[in-house]
Length: 211
Ligand code: SF4
Image 1 (cartoon, rainbow, N blue to C red):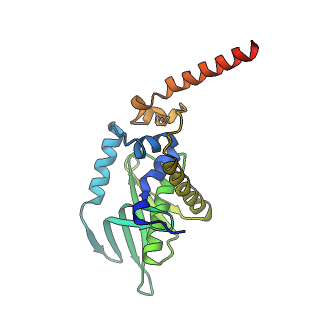
Image 2 (image 1 turned 60 degrees about the vertical axis):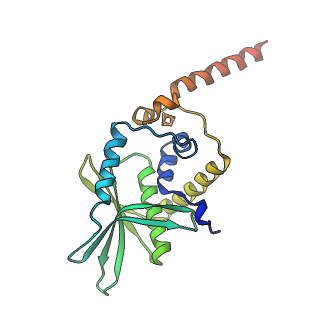
Image 3 (image 1 turned 30 degrees about the horizontal axis):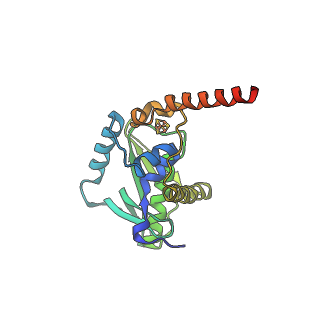
């Protein structure tokens, strides 16, 4: 299967989807976006990462703000940084690096996004990319990420799920969780209120059952 250019979805939607399906729909279907401290600092960090074009230092060429896409997965976006490492045979091995605020996360939202970037580059450049890295602002450390079969499968599955979500045009219901406290959309989403509403519904259903 190959997507048309008009049907490509943003690679960042995959990260939003893994974090929370509702957040993904609120941002990309309902076009709701508000900034909090986390997103403002994250945006500035990405803008800094996109500045500066290209440079070569020794055996590493660094390109910033590279436009990438995959027609097979139906994805497009901007890669913060792609390093090209010179190999002994003279070829250049791409190595994507994504900048993130904060620290490494327990879920796959960052690694899926990075893997999607690698899969876009593989399709565009006809190469195999075994690894990349995430740079976290809080820890100031680079975390190497291996694009193994599990991560590639999850990335492909997430891309399919995001397309299905967008095709449905339906925003999933809120489910309150710890992650909501760091979510810039908590005021619009009202996950606790939605949770209570579901409790009332359950209460009424039980009451009707008894009657
Ligand atoms: S507040 Fe929670 S449920 Fe609502 S979009 Fe954010 S993470 Fe998802």
